[in-house]
Length: 205
Image 1 (cartoon, one colour):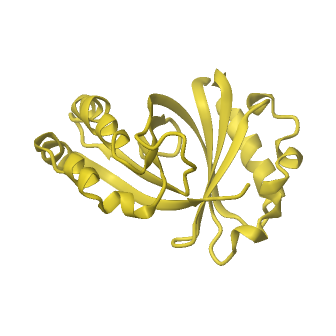
Image 2 (cartoon, one colour):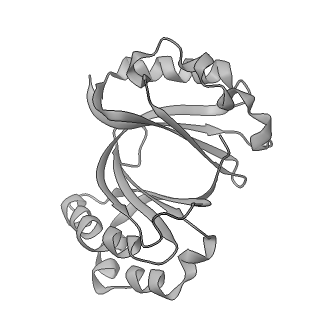
């Protein structure tokens, strides 16, 4: 079934390797060849040494329907290009929030991702909290270059919030903590399930 897609996300376990040992990423033409779903896409890789994760975004130039069968083809191509990768998955992401941050125009160095499933019955409330208070609030923190949120249609968790940051210390800053510690945040966050929080460094690729 086709899903309207803004970006494709390739997740891979690359434990024990450095980003310099992944030459297949630097030459994506070899493993993207023939995949019409990703024509003219913009590639962006982020890297976490611990726990050894690579997240690779393929941002489509405009939203378009992507078939589930395209995901298997992209996974196969990625495995050919980066044979050292393990536990590879490909997901379709639909953007539901996107805002330039207080530090828009600066070059981000880190990329922070929060993935979570809402507890049953809390999806609408958590979406309102994210879109109305939390994401705009964090976007307004100095050190945040951009704040975006997607829905992950394939390999969840469902909610995929990500932040481009100038420094890791932005997360511990007083303005960031103030946004995290609102009354609404205290009501919404206990209803997160399957939550993953990962700090990535931006790759040179």
